[in-house]
Length: 353
Ligand code: DP6
Image (cartoon, rainbow, N blue to C red; front, side, top):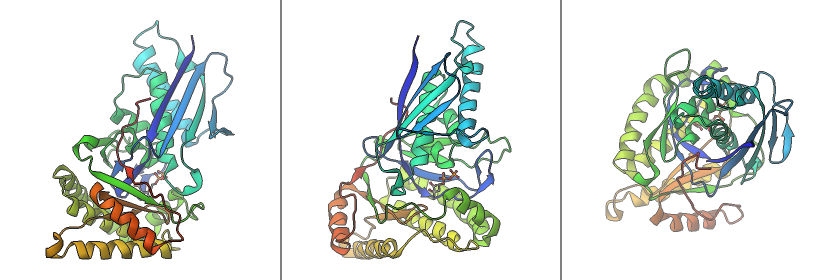
């Protein structure tokens, strides 16, 4: 028999940012986070995995180039965890099941977007890897259960196992068994929101998320305030805004949280700068757009929300009716700038193959 499975997973963009680990090996975060999973059609990773008795070691190809699987690295951990689940959930229960947990795997993963663009390829990559091995191993696991494994590849990857609006509960157990992703609302709940990605720079960022967030944990006093006093309330408030389809409130919280994430990066020693002058100008344009929209005669509500991850590129969330106007604004202010001018619609769950 041939044991083969292919699965895709989309990128997710956080509205409440994950920034800081309390356990770097298990990848357990210092705070909960919440994101929106983008449509499968635009930014996704597609992973094929194959198990065979004749393979001599686990091997991995990323965009066609073989990468070393480091013995105790994140990739090795995810593969080992998936083999463990195969053994426990399938082979131990059904002695006639093929002993795939004992076979080596070959894994090939492709991104349909440039890895260098500073967009979250590790999130979709580890989510697609986990989903593909779950399919290969015929695991009965739910996406939330699989998120526990994807989390150990890259924290933000746990949220790409689900579509729509997704929360990653920080959890407080040392084992990490309560640190998983759950869907707050499916993609169908609020299909009107779109994401516009403005590529400000497609060169690779200076400080990686992994090392940057550790430096923040070690040195930023502001991070402690954020973890204890700010994020818990924001998680509740943004979940309520999503359930109520209240874009004004969703936008207010999303922009505030992006700004606080970049504030804790600046509060790190030595400080970390992810945004550049163009990033900051896009903030100014969206703030002005919202200021005018919030005038009573214009309806009194925000019409767009920006958010920035560990790089200078902007993601702008907006109801579909506003996208055209926002694109023309951005193009007018930044004519030299290479943006993705097609608005991306947001949603799509992983694991559809
Ligand atoms: C700013 O998930 O890439 O995008 O867990 O070390 O792999 P590791 O970090 P990663 O960090 C993402 C940080 C962020 C915010 C977010 O996606 O929540």
